[in-house]
Length: 226
Image 1 (spheres, rainbow, N blue to C red):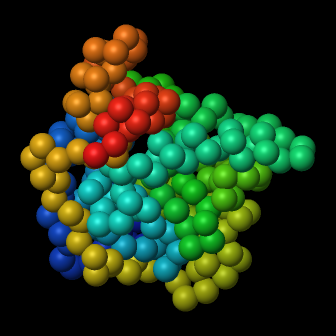
Image 2: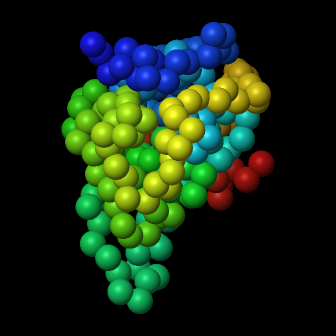
């Protein structure tokens, strides 16, 4: 049984879901490929919450707070080290912030990240969970779908998650908000062709694929405020 089959047997998806995004376009926008299990998971479940607690970021979500293609992943990556250094006793990070890409959040403000190593093998990415960008961190050596199946079956215990998370059993509640359709030529807050062209024209050493560093995104915003 595949991880997705195990998850859907444990926690049935909605009978009807919004159309899946154009994954090629999403990956072009992000400048990186995404794990296949994530794409299948979003296609099967659509937007919503697991156990009224875990929300996965969606491409082109109506709110930037849950938009995989919006500013949150880059913003959180930049804030991880800022929060750590601001602490009286900085803690050790289990992964470099540059290797973390946020793709989910909980009702308690815990963040779910992909550990994007190896960068060119997204199906090998593992999971890290963090409590509001502070210590502690929890790492899971498996895919996102494996992680969800483990959490919802009770076989994977995440210390920062509520003990009564499964008190009413595993369930998925669809969101009533619909993802927004990207408009051709519209600017996005994460990586775009415009940002890459600007960076290359201004002397930045930026490869054709891969995440755009937050400092380049911020520099582009300063030059293009409108």
